Length: 254
Image (cartoon, rainbow, N blue to C red; front, side):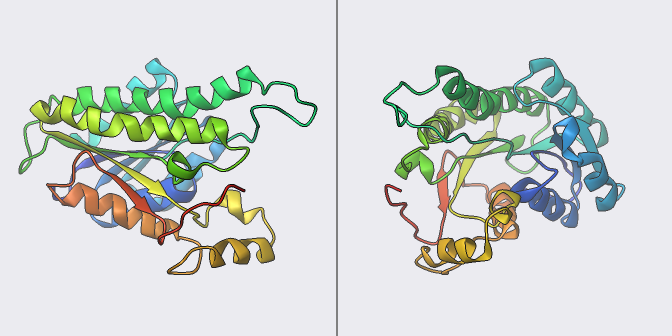
């Protein structure tokens, strides 16, 4: 699909992977609606990106808010690309140090944001795209974000790894489900990327994390995630696939 002139929606677009993706889509001619929480500073990010960027404050788990965001994205051009980057983590074990069971509430909260939020964005984007006339072969493309933790979750990552594994599981099913509507679905599973979350760590820790990647032996750049997202949109036979973007990294137990 040619990106120039399409409407695009990027969740989690105020920072990190989402911000880089929004910037790349804009550089290729898309009209981009950035979705993030009201506390995210997304309005300032959109203002700095220029007139083809719009910010919409919404929680990805809220049906009404996300429906309004999707409708906003379609006002500028038919919505043909959604890149869903919003998510969160939480560190916990099955049993804590006192051998007490991990918090069910904390586990459910991560599932709510990461997995249910992904389905919410998927279903609402697909409904909007299904009304489009085909452009080339597609009515739309939806990209979700998992993690290498979906495959090699580390100790303490049980809610995060479970949520991301659920996204991987949704991908081929959604692609088959939406094939009759000419809507493609893929997922990117990034490894260790240089995002605001990692920026809180010391330079020594960041360097050590980078050295754990076989090649290139460094942290991934948000711009490289964005490049992958736009390559998926542009390549008509990429469908139903979860793509590891990790420099051949395989995570150890801890």
